Image 1 (cartoon, rainbow over the protein chains, first blue to last red):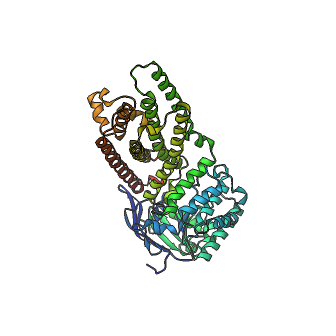
Image 2 (image 1 turned 30 degrees about the vertical axis):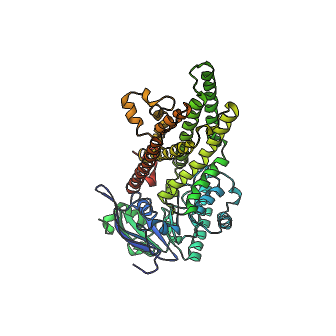
Image 3 (image 1 turned 135 degrees about the horizontal axis):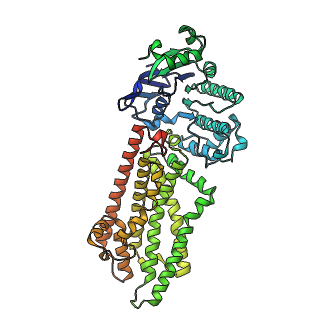
Length: 249
Length: 267
């Protein structure tokens, strides 16, 4: 375990009966690092993220956020953690500003009014301030979710397909903002995506998951050639279709 | 427990109430209608009965207190249902919010909404029918306290049931006060009931409250021992409901239900 790691996962398992959704995975996310968590549907990416968020209890293994053991002190561990996921939009019956207010209180954000103004500006949401989230487009809702995700200036950011419903220009903009936030806060991010070009652009390192296990770990720009593939997408397809050829059991 | 996280749950409900007349109106409209309906029934019975009973204190007062209990319960369940309807569990429970803070926030929300309902009931009953709750004297504080604690217990039980069985179980929760009212003896002495129903009544704190209310309306002193039993029962049942909710929540975290809560995944 590296001193100063933002996230340290050791021998993490989640089983449902005889089925292992996540099978003894270990990895770290360091400050100023964006780690891509890649793999086909059902590989265990969202299960891993849910365990890190404390909404799913691991069968075994440990999760440390900073120096805090998640199982022993969940609230402290999550104070400087946040997430955005395409499947977890903010409540549609509150306005953008109201949602940010409620979540700012939950995270104990200091100087909340000013911070809300900052994130509204960061994601170009000022004009939607008093609009109920439920009537926003999916792309606008995604930006609100991202604004919530950086509201508490997290040390650990978990992003589950954060740009899935954004147009290419907005997606590029979001990637820049998150990279800037990670650098400015010396934060770490765990990022899942099925867009391999995006992964190559934004991630410092990638972990390929298949059937709950980490098959590959490395630089997204170097990994394809190391495994005889032309692109990261080719490597992804190989992991999805032929995990055994890459060491998956 | 952190006050700002409990406050967030209350603030969320305030935002919802402020922006939605459909949520605001039921806080007082239906209780006001109930008071008016039972006020006129009491007035009619007062005019035709030769028994010398105070039907306002006996019936209207009982309805008022029963509605109060239902409001307290619904204050908890409604705030919880807002999270069910907006599929908000993942967002909330991925924050530092603890389950104790969340439930305390629901209770604080219920205090806020039930005080609004009680105030409207008291004002309407006083203005339209001249009934003051002060007619019950000092035991009124015990009545309100017992009904509040039991209402919270019912609310927490209801949320545990919906968390365990899924959003469709919401329809099992709304009728709970109506299901309990025959056993609680809101309108008649418990001695009217068959023995098996009386056995159920003995574990329901409101049944002691309404017996005491009838004693006062008949000019007798209520039993302090019975009110003490009611208070102990209410506290014990609140603790049981909180324990059950905690177990259901832990199971939801263990099985992954909390992260993907919907009608399709619960069960």
